[in-house]
Image 1: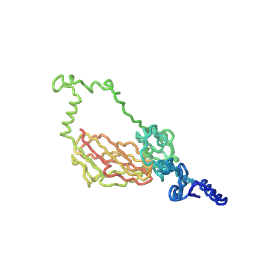
Image 2: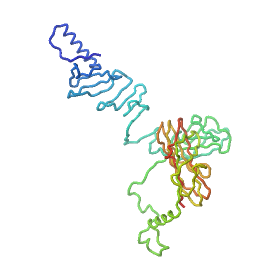
Image 3: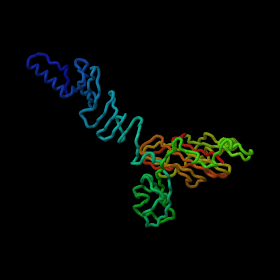
Length: 397
C-alpha cells in the first residue's frame, strides 16, 4: 500500500527524481491505498482517480467524481468474503462469500435471498415449484384399516406434495421419513398394524382461486325466481307480491333486530401451542356476549347456545412461529372431531403473523357447544397472538 502527496514530479537530480517516480508508481499500482483521503491535508486529489480506503474491513474501492469534490463507492476489494453493489455510496446488494447468501437492503443476510423492503413480482411467484395462487388447499381426511401386511394406500385426492400430507396411525403422527408419496398413493416403509380405521391420512390438494371479471355475470346466469322487476314485485295483494332484494333485506333486518345474537371471544394473552397434536383453544376475554353463551373461567374453550336453530361459527388464528410451521384450524361441535377444517397454512421459516380462518354453519339445539381446534406441526415454538385469535358464534336462524 502506498500514497503520495501528488503526481507532479518537478525537475530535480537523478536520485531524487527516481525516488519520487517510484513513490508515484507505487501509489498508482496500489490504487492509492491508505487511510488518508486524497484531497485532504497534503494529499492531492484528481477527477476520476481511484482510492482504496483501508479504513474499512474489507477495504473499499472509491473513485473521485468528475467535479473533484467527492467520492463514489465502487465496492469491496482484496477479499472473497464479501461482494457488494453500492448506490449513492450506500450498500444495497450484499453477497456473503462464506454462505453464498444474497441480501437486498440487508448487509448480513440470514437466508439464501434476504430482502429488507417491498417485493413486486409481475410474473409467477412459486414456493417449492408451486404457484402462490395454488397455495390454498382442499383438505381431505382418508381413513384406512391396517391388516399388518399392506403398505400402499390410495388417497381420495392427489396432494400438491408430500408436505401437504399428514399421517396418523392409532392417533400417533408419523414422520414423513416413514412413507413416500407417488401421485395419490401413500406407501409405508413398513406395514401399519392391524386395526379398524386406525390409519388417518390428511391431505391438501390444489385449490385455484378466482372471481368473475367485472360485468361478466348476466341475468341469464340467474334463476328466474331469484329476481323480479319492481312492477312485477308490486303486482297482486300484500301477501302475494314477489319479493325484491329490498323486501328480502327488509324482512331480514326485522328478524335480526328481534332475534339476532352474537358472541365473540378472544385470548387475553399469548398462548404457546403444542406441536404434533390438536390444541383446543381457550378464550378468557369477551368482546361481546349478547346471548350469555360464554364463561371466561369455566369451560372457556366453549360457546354454548340456548336455542334451536342455526348458527354461523367462525374462528381465526394468528401465530408467531420461530421455525417452519404448518397449521390447520378446525371447528367442532359438542367435543366431537373437527367438523370442518380450514386451508392448511404454511410458514417456510420463522414468521410473525401466520394466519388461519375457518367458518361453518351448524344446526343447533339448546346445550350444544362449539370449540376451535388448532393442529400444529413445527420444529420450533408457536405462540398465538392473543387478540387476533378469536371465535365468533352468530345466530342466523
